[in-house]
Each structure stands twice: as C-alpha cells, then as structure tokens.
Image (cartoon, rainbow, N blue to C red; front, side, top):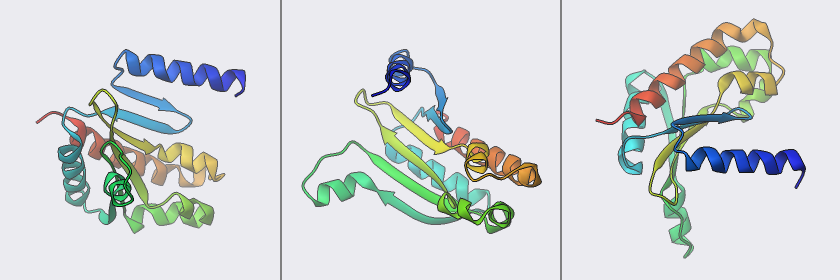
Amino acid sequence: MRRWEAGLVALTAFLFAWGLQAMAADGLTTVKSGCGPKETMNRLEGEVRAKGMTVFSRIDHAAGAADVGLSLRPTELLIFGNARAGTPLMQSAQTIGLDLPLKVLVWQDASGDTWLSYNDPSWLAKRHGIGHEAERATTAISAALAAVVKAAASAP
C-alpha cells in the first residue's frame, strides 16, 4: 500500500471513530442516518418516489450473502434516476452511463450506526470528462440527490 493510501485509510478510520456526520473522499459522500438501516432505506425510496424519480432496483446485499451461507451486516443499494436529468450528461459523454442511474448504498457499520453513501454527481462528471456544458444538469442532480439523502437520514 502506498504511503498516501495508508494515510487516507488512517484518516477515514479516525473520522469514523470521532462520529463525523458526513464525509467525502474521492467523490464518495457518506452521511450518517438517525434511523436504522431498513427504515433509512424505506425513507430513501419514499423520498426518491416523492421527487418523481424512477426506482429501478433495490438490492439487498445482506440477503444475497445469506443465500450463499455468508453473513453481512445490513447493506442495501437503491438504483434510481430521471431520464430528463441524466440524459444531458450522457449526451456530453455516453460513458457516464456506467455510473447512471444514481445509486445510494444504505449500510450498517460494526458499531450499529447506519450510513448512506453515494457518488457525488460533480465527481462523476469530472471522471467522464464532462465540462461546463452540463454544469446545470450536474448541479440539479447533486441538489436532488443531497435532498433525498438528507430527508432519509434525518431522525423522525
């Protein structure tokens, strides 16, 4: 492991230990939830639908692990999007279709805390070489994603 990678791992562990409410590293945004994993995922799915976005799939990784005799703390992925919002990004660079539709992972850590993690849309745009021509779309997607995650993570 390179020295900077070891430093990043140590920093991430330190931040988790101090209970930081939200983190971002290399385009990954992680937000702590005030609810358990199932309730957080149900709230997330409800918020996504309420915003008029399409839910394409809800994948229960823990159930998949159990099906093959392995254990995994609660870990679910919600895949969702809106063609009106995502298409302008794909018109700029079709390769962003690898990262669209959007995905949010709801997971529980070893301490029992629940988290939501997602790729920042601005980071995805940079990853695929999308410039200022799609800035309006990227900004709108970022705002919508942050809003649904915030609503899902807030304590009832």
